[in-house]
Image 1 (tube, rainbow over the protein chains, first blue to last red):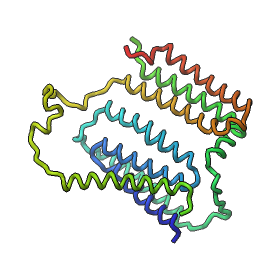
Image 2 (image 1 turned 30 degrees about the horizontal axis):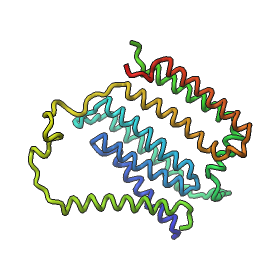
Image 3 (image 1 turned 45 degrees about the horizontal axis):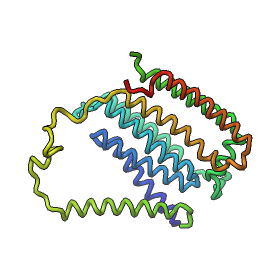
Image 4 (image 1 turned 45 degrees about the vertical axis):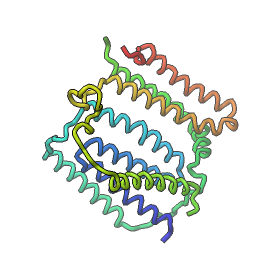
Amino acid sequence: MDASVILFYVISVLLVLSSLMVVFLRNVVHCALALVVALFLIAILFVMLHAPMVGVLQVLVYAGAIMVLFLFVIMFLNPTASEPRRKLWWGFGSAAALLLAASLAALLSNGEAPADPVTATETFGSPETLAKSLFTDFVLPFEITSVLLLVAIIGAVVLAKREP
Amino acid sequence: MDHPYFPLLILFTLAGAVVLGLLFVAQKVGPKSPNPVKAEPFESGNPPRGDARIRFSVRFYLVAMLFLIFDLEVVFLYPWAILFRQLGLFGLIEMGIFLGILLIGFVYVWKKGALEWD
């Protein structure tokens, strides 16, 4: 087996384990830490897919900044460890998970390889390539992103800033 | 492994292994003699009152949220800086529009007093 395939399986197993820890650990702060581990492992997968820029952003933005917001929410809501299990939601979630697993199994057991697989080149997701397409072909979406961020700024201030 | 970022993975793995190894050795080898005074947060300070996990003010969340948004703005500046010379005046103008729209948001935040801590 190829070394990168072995590496992929090692990372995937660790990723599934840490994701399970996010769901099953009883202390929410431990769940958040397990989520950081999972996001880091996904970043490694991105880098392996020749998308280093996305991988770095995954660590910087998701594992860094967004996890801070998660921890803030945990501190606001201040959940106690003795939260009672909710039977209804437990069943609902399990049913949804089973449905998802069944549909995935149906898809994967289909076993038909894609007709025309394309191998990504080394520079496929490099910052240079990304910048070139972002600032020439996709100028309008890029500019609209700033409007999206502007809406997010105003929304955050309106929701969180209490008038004295 | 000829992936250009493979050395980085080795670095992270080694760093993690060293940290975990040191923690393990400290736990196994280090002497343990616990007593209640040692377990206090401040041995010669005030005795602690109440719980450490109090409810935080929503102002912290607003600051974190605004940091995140302007952090995402900076993310777009990195690829732009790489191609700055190739893009020339066109690149300068498009980034000017991008930053100009976000400047409106910054002025709004400022005028609204969201950066004040009153």
